[in-house]
Image (cartoon, rainbow, N blue to C red):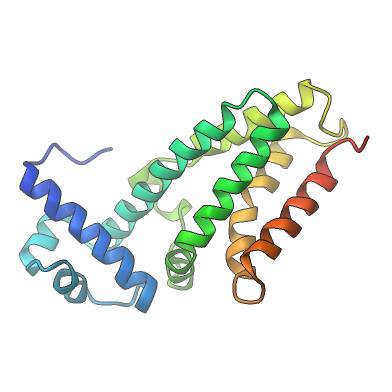
Length: 193
């Protein structure tokens, strides 16, 4: 459920807190204190607790913000007429998200936080899952997808590229990761012609 409408200054403070928390969590992990976040945002502790009763509420807001912006980009990619090109574009969004949000995601995962754990606060990831699956279904209808593969499995495989990308960042250059994961994915799921 979205937060109630706020005055413009309250909205600005909330946005500053979320931005500060993203930076602090990416740098120090989720064990960082709320005071550190308030200080980074240049706001008092009262302001942070008026906006977020708990650290979990703040984390849920961050996840929602990231998921919302990624959903916009994924929707644009999914709208491409050619479903294989749509999957390629969606993979580029996944990789760009991993590159930009990798440190934050790693901090959240290391702290034991997951999107699923906060689904009740930010909404289920079903819309993203459905978007991926619809593109995979289109690829199947176009005859590009191997017929022995279940579309929901392929969609999950496509989505799983995000944690793989984040994990591989420490060992490989981004371009190498993107190229190899893309090759692995498409060689595994497309009819080779």
